[in-house]
Length: 178
Image (cartoon, rainbow, N blue to C red; front, side):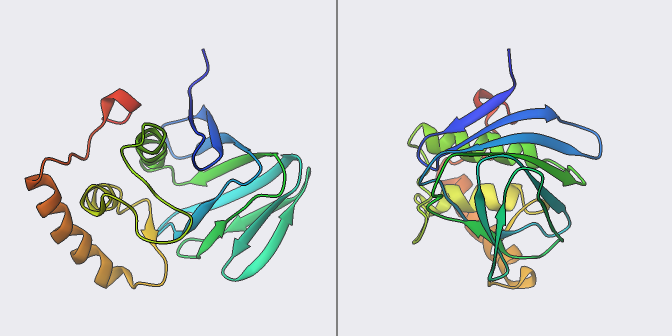
Protein backbone atom coordinates (compact mmCIF):
# COMPACT_ATOMS: atom_id res chain seq x y z
CA UNK A 1 0.00 0.00 0.00
CA UNK A 2 1.33 3.42 -0.96
CA UNK A 3 1.54 6.23 1.56
CA UNK A 4 -0.40 8.95 -0.22
CA UNK A 5 -2.92 11.75 0.12
CA UNK A 6 -5.15 13.14 -2.60
CA UNK A 7 -7.35 16.21 -2.88
CA UNK A 8 -9.50 16.44 -6.01
CA UNK A 9 -10.53 19.99 -5.02
CA UNK A 10 -6.99 21.32 -5.48
CA UNK A 11 -6.08 18.72 -8.12
CA UNK A 12 -3.14 17.20 -6.24
CA UNK A 13 -2.06 13.70 -5.29
CA UNK A 14 1.06 13.22 -3.17
CA UNK A 15 2.81 9.89 -2.83
CA UNK A 16 5.33 9.97 0.00
CA UNK A 17 8.64 8.31 -0.88
CA UNK A 18 10.74 9.37 2.10
CA UNK A 19 9.32 10.73 5.34
CA UNK A 20 11.20 11.44 8.52
CA UNK A 21 14.77 12.39 9.05
CA UNK A 22 16.13 15.47 7.38
CA UNK A 23 14.55 15.15 3.93
CA UNK A 24 10.97 14.83 2.73
CA UNK A 25 10.65 13.33 -0.73
CA UNK A 26 7.38 12.84 -2.56
CA UNK A 27 5.84 12.36 -5.97
CA UNK A 28 3.44 15.19 -6.81
CA UNK A 29 0.79 14.40 -9.41
CA UNK A 30 -1.05 17.42 -10.78
CA UNK A 31 -4.39 17.29 -12.60
CA UNK A 32 -5.45 19.89 -15.18
CA UNK A 33 -6.81 22.92 -13.34
CA UNK A 34 -4.83 22.18 -10.16
CA UNK A 35 -3.64 25.00 -7.93
CA UNK A 36 -1.66 25.87 -4.80
CA UNK A 37 -1.98 29.33 -3.29
CA UNK A 38 1.10 31.50 -2.98
CA UNK A 39 3.03 30.67 0.19
CA UNK A 40 6.52 30.52 1.65
CA UNK A 41 8.47 27.97 3.65
CA UNK A 42 10.24 29.98 6.37
CA UNK A 43 13.27 27.68 6.72
CA UNK A 44 12.95 24.99 4.05
CA UNK A 45 14.34 24.63 0.56
CA UNK A 46 11.95 23.02 -1.91
CA UNK A 47 13.10 21.35 -5.12
CA UNK A 48 10.75 20.47 -8.01
CA UNK A 49 12.04 18.05 -10.65
CA UNK A 50 9.95 17.23 -13.72
CA UNK A 51 9.12 13.58 -14.37
CA UNK A 52 6.22 13.81 -16.88
CA UNK A 53 4.15 16.56 -18.47
CA UNK A 54 4.80 20.29 -18.27
CA UNK A 55 4.21 22.26 -15.11
CA UNK A 56 4.30 26.06 -14.68
CA UNK A 57 5.46 27.29 -11.29
CA UNK A 58 5.38 30.94 -10.22
CA UNK A 59 8.46 31.64 -8.12
CA UNK A 60 8.43 35.17 -6.69
CA UNK A 61 6.62 36.50 -9.77
CA UNK A 62 8.79 34.67 -12.31
CA UNK A 63 7.19 31.84 -14.29
CA UNK A 64 9.17 28.59 -14.63
CA UNK A 65 8.06 25.74 -16.88
CA UNK A 66 9.24 22.40 -15.54
CA UNK A 67 9.44 19.53 -18.01
CA UNK A 68 10.96 16.06 -17.58
CA UNK A 69 14.58 16.49 -16.56
CA UNK A 70 14.16 20.13 -15.44
CA UNK A 71 14.62 21.19 -11.82
CA UNK A 72 13.66 24.39 -10.02
CA UNK A 73 14.99 25.08 -6.51
CA UNK A 74 13.04 27.42 -4.24
CA UNK A 75 15.07 28.90 -1.37
CA UNK A 76 13.49 29.47 2.06
CA UNK A 77 11.14 32.46 2.36
CA UNK A 78 10.61 32.66 -1.41
CA UNK A 79 6.97 33.08 -2.47
CA UNK A 80 5.76 30.41 -4.89
CA UNK A 81 2.49 29.02 -6.24
CA UNK A 82 0.78 27.54 -9.25
CA UNK A 83 -2.73 27.88 -10.58
CA UNK A 84 -4.94 26.47 -13.28
CA UNK A 85 -2.46 23.82 -14.39
CA UNK A 86 -2.86 23.38 -18.15
CA UNK A 87 -2.13 19.67 -18.20
CA UNK A 88 -1.44 16.70 -15.99
CA UNK A 89 2.10 16.55 -14.65
CA UNK A 90 4.25 14.42 -12.38
CA UNK A 91 7.02 15.98 -10.31
CA UNK A 92 9.49 14.75 -7.75
CA UNK A 93 9.51 17.17 -4.81
CA UNK A 94 12.32 17.23 -2.25
CA UNK A 95 12.17 19.40 0.86
CA UNK A 96 15.11 20.05 3.18
CA UNK A 97 14.87 20.11 6.17
CA UNK A 98 11.73 17.98 6.30
CA UNK A 99 10.42 19.26 9.64
CA UNK A 100 6.72 18.24 9.78
CA UNK A 101 5.74 19.26 6.25
CA UNK A 102 4.31 15.81 5.52
CA UNK A 103 1.86 16.33 8.41
CA UNK A 104 0.87 19.69 6.96
CA UNK A 105 0.17 18.09 3.56
CA UNK A 106 -1.82 15.26 5.13
CA UNK A 107 -4.00 17.57 7.24
CA UNK A 108 -4.64 20.33 4.71
CA UNK A 109 -5.33 18.01 1.78
CA UNK A 110 -7.33 15.59 3.95
CA UNK A 111 -9.54 18.32 5.40
CA UNK A 112 -10.01 19.86 1.97
CA UNK A 113 -10.92 16.51 0.40
CA UNK A 114 -13.46 15.93 3.20
CA UNK A 115 -14.99 19.38 2.64
CA UNK A 116 -14.09 20.48 6.16
CA UNK A 117 -11.63 23.17 5.02
CA UNK A 118 -12.06 25.25 1.89
CA UNK A 119 -8.92 26.85 0.56
CA UNK A 120 -9.84 28.53 -2.72
CA UNK A 121 -7.28 29.60 -5.31
CA UNK A 122 -8.16 33.18 -4.32
CA UNK A 123 -10.03 34.64 -1.38
CA UNK A 124 -10.31 33.75 2.28
CA UNK A 125 -9.95 30.15 3.51
CA UNK A 126 -13.01 28.88 5.38
CA UNK A 127 -13.45 28.33 8.25
CA UNK A 128 -10.82 30.92 9.04
CA UNK A 129 -10.37 29.82 12.67
CA UNK A 130 -9.57 26.24 11.64
CA UNK A 131 -7.13 27.59 9.06
CA UNK A 132 -5.54 29.73 11.82
CA UNK A 133 -5.15 26.74 14.15
CA UNK A 134 -3.35 24.83 11.40
CA UNK A 135 -1.20 27.76 10.27
CA UNK A 136 -0.08 28.20 13.87
CA UNK A 137 0.55 24.45 14.28
CA UNK A 138 2.67 24.33 11.09
CA UNK A 139 4.28 27.77 11.45
CA UNK A 140 7.81 26.30 11.05
CA UNK A 141 6.80 24.70 7.76
CA UNK A 142 4.59 27.22 5.98
CA UNK A 143 3.44 30.83 6.00
CA UNK A 144 1.34 33.10 3.82
CA UNK A 145 3.29 35.37 1.52
CA UNK A 146 3.03 39.13 1.54
CA UNK A 147 2.73 39.38 5.33
CA UNK A 148 5.94 39.57 7.40
CA UNK A 149 6.51 36.55 9.64
CA UNK A 150 6.91 38.80 12.69
CA UNK A 151 3.34 39.99 12.10
CA UNK A 152 1.57 36.81 11.01
CA UNK A 153 2.98 34.59 13.77
CA UNK A 154 1.26 36.48 16.62
CA UNK A 155 -1.86 36.91 14.49
CA UNK A 156 -2.13 33.14 13.83
CA UNK A 157 -1.38 32.48 17.51
CA UNK A 158 -4.24 34.73 18.63
CA UNK A 159 -6.72 33.40 16.06
CA UNK A 160 -5.63 29.82 16.86
CA UNK A 161 -6.44 30.36 20.56
CA UNK A 162 -9.93 31.50 19.59
CA UNK A 163 -10.21 28.60 17.14
CA UNK A 164 -9.29 26.03 19.78
CA UNK A 165 -11.87 27.57 22.13
CA UNK A 166 -14.40 27.06 19.34
CA UNK A 167 -13.48 23.38 19.08
CA UNK A 168 -10.96 23.34 16.22
CA UNK A 169 -7.94 21.13 16.77
CA UNK A 170 -4.40 20.97 15.41
CA UNK A 171 -3.97 17.17 15.35
CA UNK A 172 -5.78 14.93 12.85
CA UNK A 173 -4.64 11.33 13.27
CA UNK A 174 -7.43 10.25 10.90
CA UNK A 175 -5.40 11.91 8.13
CA UNK A 176 -2.07 10.55 9.38
CA UNK A 177 -1.00 13.75 11.17
CA UNK A 178 -0.87 13.41 14.97
